[in-house]
Image (tube, rainbow, N blue to C red; front, side, top):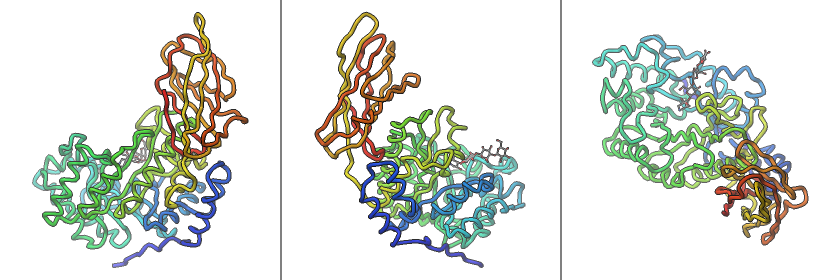
Length: 466
Ligand code: G3I
């Protein structure tokens, strides 16, 4: 049978050296940062660390040439986002159709990219006929489906997500048609069928909300441990990583490590980090820090083999349609402009921060108060780790408070969220430096509960002071 070995990245160490020199020059200004990464893709940076960096894609997006230009050049790995699912590949019993999936696999191969297969057994995007299969026949139907599809793509994929999303949040089994009609053994049977069809492709269990340690990841952990003990073929765990800005699980690296210690690989398979819309500079900065932290967690565990974005641009993100009011989850915006998240990933993939991380603090004090109004002063202080070249302070208005004007800072008010960025003349703060801005408010002068300062560049960490 034809066996395709995905070519390694087209450009390697020389590019990395160029990138490292450029990055070590610093990330202190947006334009130079963008220029520093211009020649070196995330795929190349990851490859230099022995990982892949990829993106999911879907067939309706392929006529968009601006989109495919970046898809084909920036990433070393592609996941077929929809059209390898059962609904598309076996729309009626015994009738298989791989036309749409092959369009993506062909494209990836022509670009020298490896491909993850997603997904063989899932409760979602199943054709109706599967639900009607009598209980006594479903195991055979599932095996046939797996055998046919894995065999069809043999030699062309690096991984298969064999079973997807089989657990509930509390760690119990999801009551899918497979669980109900075949029982607990269906997952092991699926892996055995996949291995029989292709001895080489890596077989993954894939799920969401298993990035941190908790009841759901514990259940997956116990399953993998039991598979290993019983000789059920499993090679990897896919943590989807559909995350929320500011809520990356603190135990991510530890959790990746504990799975690795069981003797399986780990991949971050569907990474996106959403925020409440609209985007703001402060939220972009938070998101960038989070993307960098996720990449660093993967790099810290040798068996974490790669990271895949669940598509790379907000133009084609699944998030807004499923979580109304949320989005902007990807490192490229809807116009294909790179966001701070992109640069944070690139910096993490170079193996450490190219510049020391700065921090800043914001301290609030009321300077005068009268019936129905007040003025306040916020002291922005450097957190003493590195000079910073700009800052953004954000807070949520306490009930009954509004802000009408500000001085020594650039004020934006959106609903209850207030953002003040440095003015042109007071952004730079030495390690021990500080500056102030002031504002006039109406209503109560209560201290905001969540005042946060985020330094520039966006990859730096933030500090909070009440
Ligand atoms: O193809 C039809 C199109 O003909 C029709 O006009 C249109 C109208 O709604 O629907 C199109 O199908 C949509 C399909 O994506 C292709 O775009 C489905 O409605 C839509 O439900 C489906 O959503 C997919 C979702 O899985 C289904 O659960 C998303 O694109 C896909 O990104 C998402 O991916 C999942 C992973 O497989 C597993 N992990 C979570 C992740 C996000 O939900």
